Length: 122
Ligand SMILES: [Zn+2]
Image (tube, rainbow, N blue to C red; front, side, top):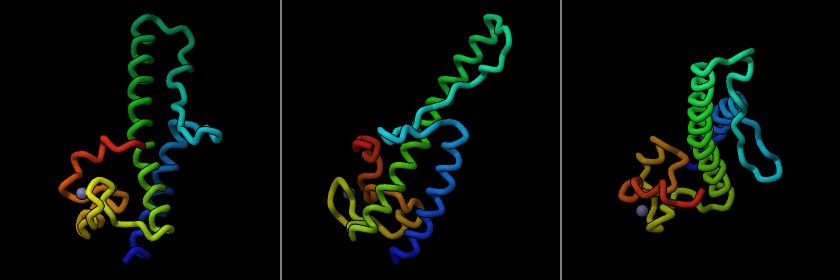
C-alpha cells in the first residue's frame, strides 16, 4: 500500500519542485524557497505600473508560501514512509483514513483533524 503512495508522492514532489523553480530559488543552507522578483523588466515604471509590480510581488510570495507548504508536506510524507511512520495522524496518533490518503498522500492528519493541519509547524 505505501509503495503506491511513495510513487505518487515522488511524482508530486517532481511537479511541485518544477513549479517552485519557476517562481522561487531554493536557499540551500536554510532549505527555504525564496520568491524571485516579478516585473523588474519594466524600464521606467510610472506609479500605476509600480503598484502593479508590488501587487504581483505580494501574490507571488503568497503563492510560493502555499506551494512550499505542499513541498514540505510531500518531503515529510516520504521521510515517514522511509521510517515506517507513514499514515498516522500527527495530532491524534490515530491511523489516517485510506480515502484521505488517496485524496492527499501528503496529508498529516486524519479526517477529524484536517482543519487543524494548518496549525502544525512546517
Ligand atoms: Zn487525528
